[in-house]
Image 1: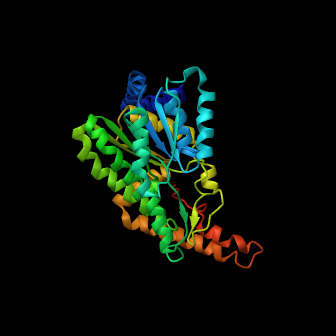
Image 2 (image 1 turned 45 degrees about the vertical axis):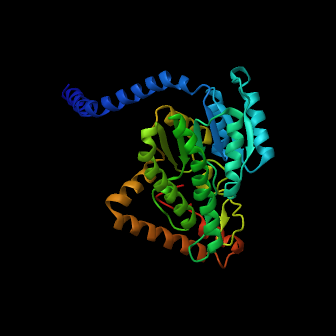
Image 3 (image 1 turned 90 degrees about the vertical axis):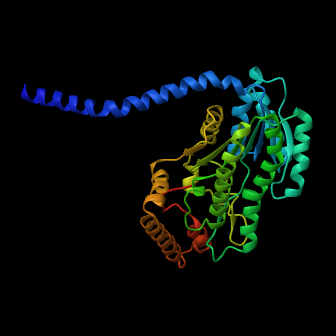
Amino acid sequence: MIKRMNWQIFLWIISTLCIPVSLPIVTMHLYRRYRLRQLKGQLKGKVVLITGASSGIGEALAHQFFKAGCRVILSARRQKELERVRDDLLRAHATTTPAHQPVVITLDLSDVASIPAAVEKAKSIFGCIDILINNGGMSQRGSVQSTKLEVDMQIMQVNYFGQVALTKAILPLMIQRKTGHIVAVSSIQGRVAIPFRSAYSASKHALQAFCDSMRPEVAQHNVHVTVVSPGYVQTSLSINAVTGSGQKYGVMDDTTAGGYPPEYVAEQVLNGVVLQEKEIILATAGPRFAILLRSLGPDIYFWIMQKRANKMLADAQSKTSSPETSQTKTKLESDDSSKLKTN
């Protein structure tokens, strides 16, 4: 009888402590879901331009926004893949197809001079662009010392200057109409940098800062800015990444393979647009803690990154005498051994 009373007292104490914490969280979650149901209908008919729409997150975004009734413009370098995505959209959402079919516009973000013409083409088709999703980009694997300057410039051209140029070409249209939403799909590495990702992290840091500066400037024109910072996502980003020499990395990292499904990321982006959220961080506890630690305890964060880099170098050097010597650089540049996993 005494043991039963003690157990009941324990449960009462736990419930008393948890309810004040859990109740507001549950209430906010339910309110968010209610708002989403109420506001999602406002997306119908909106013109959405998605870069990097030929695969991965961009393709998943196309499905989400097309299903929501948006007029979707698919943009990337690969014409055939864009056409495949367009056909997939029409097949997958045959019963909910909007009045306008998806439009394909090829665009190379590294060719800044071609961007105004692409925007004019999109404008001529739909008359406006309500939502711009800067999703196109590329990744990198390599140490600072081994990465050629040309590679740094290439990454920055695609991940930063190309997106800035596209944003600046579309922004006047939004300001003129007093409405619009700009989304930048960044990365956790836009918040915290890790070893052997210097060019990629730098480009994402730059994009984050650009959006943070732009957001208060355009708010008066009813233009919203959202930065999405996902952790690892199950895409071909690591396979298509470039090494320090500019060659294709060609390896699917284990962390990437075990990341979030792109469909989940796309759904969260759509929800963020509906709710006009300023930032969306999609990551597990480790990367979230890394962001906090970088701000509150930078010395500890730098120490952890130093340990991480040393371990990666040691692991690579230990394999130099093995039959797998050809994979040494791959392992050196991989982040599978990290404790603070960030995309």
